[in-house]
Image: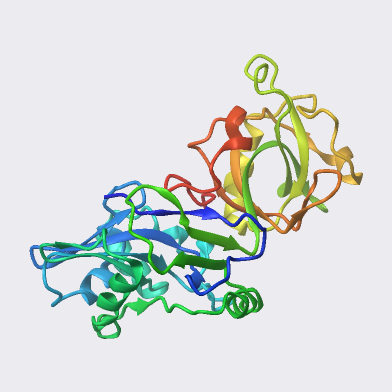
Amino acid sequence: MRPMLATPTPTPGQPPSGPEWLHEVKWDGVRALAETRDGTLILYNRSGREITPAYPEIVAGAAGLPDGLLFDGEIIVLDPATGVPTLQAIAPRMHVRDANRAARLAGERPATFMAFDLLRAGANDLTSRPLTERRQLLEQLDLIRLGWRLSETYDDAETVAAFTLDSGLEGVMSKRRGSLYLPGTRSVDWIKTPHRAELVAVIGGWVPESGDDRQLGSVWIGHATDEETFDADPVLYPLGRVGSGLSHGERNALLAVLRDTERADAPFAPLPEGPELRRTRWVEPLLCVQVRYLTVSAAGVLRQPVLRALRPDVRPVEAATAPSWTSTGVRLPA
């Protein structure tokens, strides 16, 4: 089964309101379905791939649950600096298959399963029942005993939006009380309101760290100027420059890739603007990245952008229309 998906809010920054809606925190982690079968717990990511080995502490906590339960939820890890769950915090755990490494990471940065839906209970398929009924059955389970958490729901959209924004959380997830669970469907009965927007962009150049030409400071990003001619003549229009979001190790790894694709001229039209241009090293527009940003300026430049992940699943010509996140996205390599 594939998880049900949400539709972006039609009014940026404003979740839907009214008595027909329930609201919860939009958690920044890894979406997962958790199934109890043959006395153990099996975890699947959004694309249906099993990810059980990566999270041994979640599996251990589920010991004693009856077979036949299917949960929908989010696996989260708290960022040690901010105390809130972030994709950066959980990223080192996302693709781990080795049991010893998974056990070590579980001790260093423990993960929690944040449950928000119950899709099956024994022989009973609950997907055709309304959300309020599924939630009632979910709340009857002793998730705290498992070391899991229940994603709480609230009636007041404005309060949840203000709280999540002030707390540095990703946003708000709003769901109609009577909504059925539609596996693999992006439904208007679920509305997501992130506090920051995300997109996929293409790197077209890099700027050395100030005072040290051997270190990566930032990258210039853009989208295809003309998708029809891009394969033959790859030209980007600029979205600005972004450098935050990278650890020291990630900068070194990304720089090694960029150095192998350097070129003499800029792949942008028009050229980006700024004093950093004189120090820029241009690269072939081959590498896509996930970028989070606050707003877009009148000139089309991203404000307060942050690099989130590599997007090897996206072709550069398709970056502008690519979904902002998929389970195949990977953290910038350390």
